[in-house]
Length: 88
Image 1: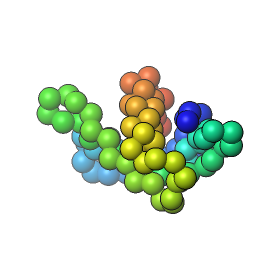
Image 2: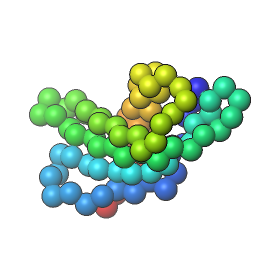
Image 3: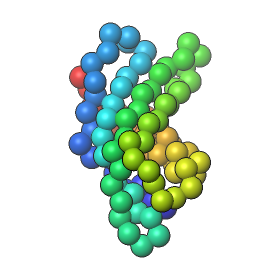
Image 4: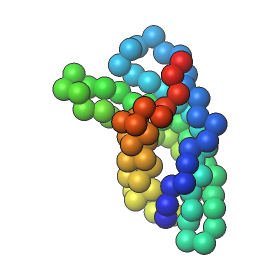
């Protein structure tokens, strides 16, 4: 499994400054096919500076869930660290 991109990424307006909500479509390469999954996620910055990611997948996936969620959370964290997530 390989995460290629998250397209149509949109940030939702929330009044809490340490929480950011996003929605988009993850493009994933599974074995020998490409799958698109709609997902919503939030990034919350804790007082210690650690970022906590909560992920919601809108449809079932034909792949083990734990490795998928771990990989997509790491991908989201890399996007956030690079400054590639859209602003408001």
